[in-house]
Amino acid sequence: KYADAFGAIVALSSALISEEAPERKDNDGFFIGTRDYAEACFGDLTKLIGSDMDPKYLAKELVTENKSLPAIYMACGFDDSLLPLNDAMAAYLNDLGISVTYKKGPGAHEWFFWDTYVKDAIYNWLPLKTTGMGVNSGNVGQ
Image (cartoon, rainbow, N blue to C red; front, side, top):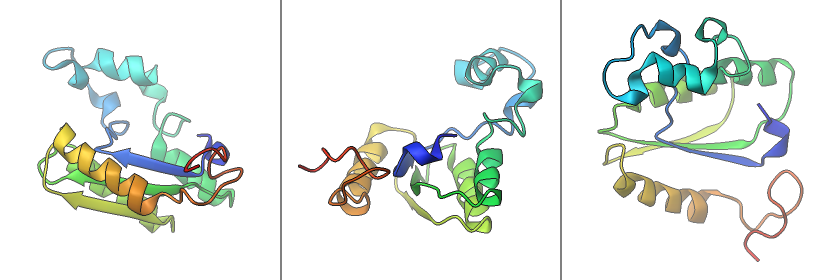
């Protein structure tokens, strides 16, 4: 939504639930799968798709408006239940012509996985040596 304010996005095991959220009917089960949780995240679920709360819509709008996007790094574990959603988003972004670094590896929705890939993103992918507006505050890496 604020693509011009950020130089990079690191998304680990992203909960890309906006497409299925409007279909939620009840509040039984683990809280993250409930309609109440989705409404707390997105507001009126009948207005979610195609809104500024819909990441696919936002990405398509940025491309349509020929705006620059932050660099994107995504990672998700082979045993993470969110893997299909992350696969789909990475493919969607690539289909739009948006460059995405997308990595998958051993692990689930857990710190073992995130600890590994946040280090990879910071030390191997993020351009910490580049300073200036749109990349970082100028204080990173100093």
